[in-house]
Amino acid sequence: MDLNDITTFLHAAARSVGAEVTSPWFYLQLGLILAGAGIAFAAGAAIRSRLDMTSLAMGWPTPLRLFMRVLVGSASTAVFAVEMTLARVVMLTSTWPSRSYLLSVAANLAFAWLIIRLVTSVIRNTFIVRLVSLSAWLVAALSILGQLEPTIDALDSVSIVLGGLRLTPLLLIKLGVLLVVALWLSNIASNFVESRITRSGDLTPSIQVLLVKMIRLALMIFAVAVVMSAVGINLSALAIFSGAAASASASACRRSSPISSAASFCWRINR
Image (cartoon, rainbow, N blue to C red):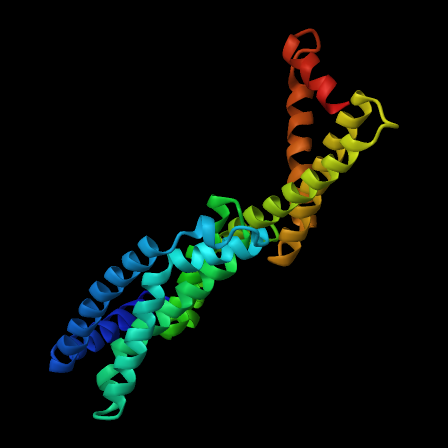
């Protein structure tokens, strides 16, 4: 995708938005969306004030309690999604489908956010929940609007080649998200293993600490390796960079005076 393609895409998007805004059906749909949002907000507040989740979910399993808490907290989103769906159905029976397109988009976005929040209710880490929820909803929104493939192509069109490694914005986004999730999963696994090790009476405290550190390090390395392999990063390219860095360091050390402290430090590192 070059500059001409980007300019053509922006012009086409501007024409589409201009044609949509000049239609009187746009303002009808916008009014319905705003009214539905107000009603959904009031309904959600009423539901949350009338339901006491502490007493209602007492004795339930922890995952089910979390699921119900998220469901009640997302009551406004659920009500809004239902309202937009009903408004879309009513308009489909009385006019052309294109005149209720915004209602369809609003309903699909609301349902997507509701499903994502319910699925991520089993995750207890707040940062991971926000990261996964926003990432998944952004992908769902682009898919609903029909812009997922153009966005992927645009992010993959800009690249920097370092040796045998091709870095693109798309690759960096994938790598960042997957690394956060993989390290979070490895932390859960290491905590589980640590709880098992600390319960063992056959190991001394020093051996337990050593084993826990070794397992944590091994799980982190394994998670990073799996993520890099999943996004298509060739580890041999990284090995080439490491070898080049080590060679440059050794060359710099050879040029240093053998009696200097810096040369002595380099000699210890290269050994």
